[in-house]
Image 1 (cartoon, helix red, strand yellow):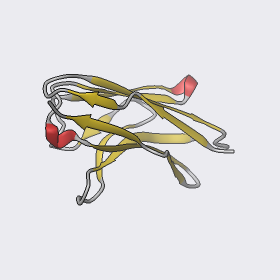
Image 2 (cartoon, one colour; image 1 turned 60 degrees about the vertical axis):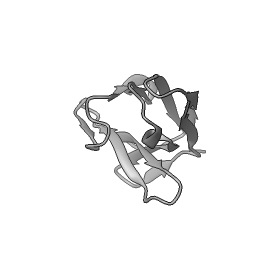
Image 3 (cartoon, one colour; image 1 turned 120 degrees about the vertical axis):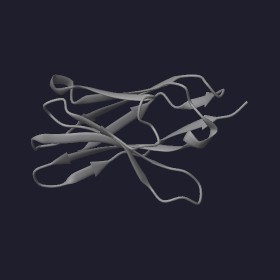
Image 4 (spheres, helix red, strand yellow; image 1 turned 180 degrees about the horizontal axis):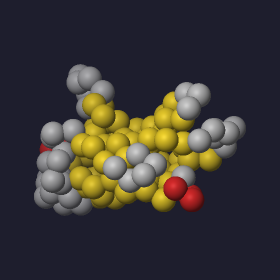
Length: 115
């Protein structure tokens, strides 16, 4: 059974930081890319950050310079370090994993940036 366990969301003030984590298990496939989508109310889903198996990263322009994605291949785990958070970063953040035979998504974790 595929499981993507996300954690680390919550309420933070503008300018603050949060660290999200996602651990994948039960995927009988080679995991290639791992990343984070986010979706704010009334807005389309956005791929915020992605990391390849080799460690190459890519970010949405809206988070470049503030977010850092990292990965532990042995543990099939990724983290998203989010700094200098803004109210517009408020969204549900979804972990996603891509393999050779398909992709899998998590249930999401809420991030709210508000004073």
